[in-house]
Amino acid sequence: MSDQTKTSEKPWGGRFSEPTDAFVERFTASVGFDQRLYHHDITGSIAHATMLAAVGVLTDAERDQIINGLNEVKADIEAGRFEWSVSLEDVHMNIEARLTERIGITGKKLHTGRSRNDQVATDIRLYLRDEIDVIADELKRLQTGLLDLAEREAATIMPGFTHLQTAQPVTFGHHLMAWYEMLARDAERLQDCRKRVNVLPLGAAALAGTTYPIDRAMTARLLGFDRASENSLDSVSDRDFAIEFCSFAALLMTHLSRFSEELVLWTSAQFDFIDLPDRFCTGSSIMPQKKNPDVPELVRGKTGRVNGHLISLLTLMKGQPLAYNKDNQEDKEPLFDTIDTVKGCLRAYADMVPAIAAKAGPMREAAKKGFSTATDLADYLVKKGVAFRDAHEIVGKAVAFGVAESRDLSEMTLAELAQFSDVIADDVFDVLTLDGSVQARNHLGGTAPDQVRAAVTRARKQLLGG
Figure 1 (tube, one colour):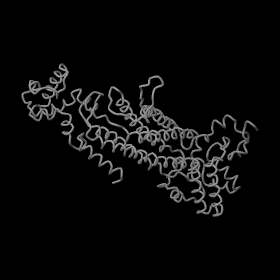
Figure 2: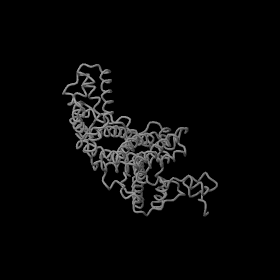
Figure 3: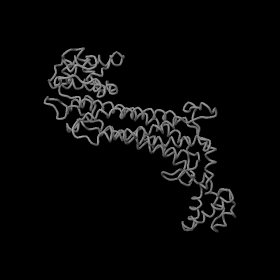
Figure 4: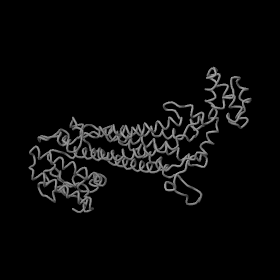
């Protein structure tokens, strides 16, 4: 049959009287995307065969034959000699079929005591666990770069914003440490997610367990899982771990998107706060002067697809009865793309952030605008015995005068300031300077340069596991 697969060629074909429709075969196959699980599928199969021999289901000779055959199949895949077949549906059946071709009937014994349902759940967990570790390393590399930059710019003054309006002066290092705090929470979430990923479903079989005398604790140890799952129904149908990872990813990407928005603003001529190296930017096909911050823009854009994958997985699972359903085949592509996207964005940021060049001059000039030390003047008045609400009104009038005169508070004379309150004296200028403002906030979590450096020191110790 040229357009259809004979039922006898299917490992499950015994019950069927007619072949699978050619379109349905292509429509239901997952091998086009799940073949990336080959390494973890083979790893899980080796552990399963080892366990089966230990409990007497396989002989030692059969175990060794299976393991050697699986390693040969793995070598074929990695050398590009493996031909994936849509008719065999998925990565699991492709590998099992090739194994049986190589070693004969012994290869058919490998699937004893398991189902593709618990096999794929195991493969995905093994795969995601490894990818989480890669992502954690990239996240740590980005955090390290942020700390280095924050320490370097601990005393660089810039305007702090609320509503994107100048609010109070802060240091660039302090602003960067706000980014770090977001990433630190992301790192914690990722490690917490890993705990729930690292549970072994193998042994649940199709949904009810198996009649063979399997040792799930042994399999868990062989594969580095913390424990085996407790309920066979839940084991094969649970995708919470994938949803939780995508939730982590959506939050991480939201943070990277916020960083990106600021980088895009700061590189503009209107802000001119930072410069990104040319290798992270592109030009215009028509405007020769352009230097576009494409990396931050693209990261900002990719956030949407990751958020979409989270919604996709939540929607995928919301109507499923226990136990396994074919719907679950749709878990892989959103998960895989989320992993790929997060890794790419983290790599780009981890490479780019340490190379950011701060423009201290424009930052400082911007901090002088917008009456950023108005709160400092109010605090000064309160310390002189003025009630805060009265101080607020006094400073508001002073700012109105400054707006009319086009001058900042620090540019006014003592006589001009004193007309708004008779408690204002020469020492007022100590609090109206940008440096005095940031230095005055010298407490845990404050923007003072010494506090920024102390925060960097604590964060480095935490990153190193101290």
